[in-house]
Image 1 (spheres, one colour):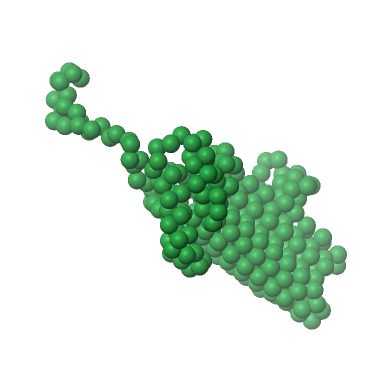
Image 2 (cartoon, rainbow, N blue to C red):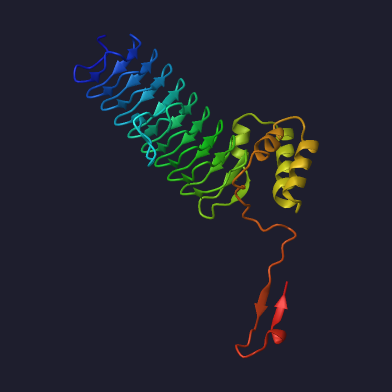
Length: 285
């Protein structure tokens, strides 16, 4: 296998396709499968129980299948399954599943930029972009075509919906519904990801339906159960059906909208005298 650099350390038990390129100083452990067309630059480490599909490009210093950063991580950890056509850039770390039967999965055609981290038991879909220094904690799900900007962080067990756009330096501790944009300064939803929707080929009719569903979720003033019922009955076809499918499984709550709800009341106190009694303070709503 002349495509393996002589300084690379490759366990003989690893299954590597004949056309795979393995660069200088790479380490490939046993129980690893690397399928056709993959290219590993220098200093890439592929840990045991990792499976790479076809045509993945792995840049310098990436570590795939590393041991979970968890106090319960023992000797028997799980697997990492990576699909095909992914570009995994320098110093990316993706950890395997926590338990012996657990698995971290990454789909197809993703771009995972420099220094991004994907923790144990995460599930990343396809055509996802994770920009530089994105931090994804354990058990997070990121659906297809989501975009996470630089230095965004996601709390464990959260979900990022399909085609969501997450702003830079966001810190998320609740689920992000599909198709929305999260502002990186306020960490609040600021509307639909219209640019992403158009680039993905959504029609104006689709976008109008998504906008109507968005208003049911964030601006109707309905209770949570009423919101779910409205989504289920009003949007039974088309892309907007994804809202009900996503929201019915919410356990951590969803990221709030930056705009105040229409029915909310903000109390403002004017010209308050420090010595005045509460009854004499002027209020405006």
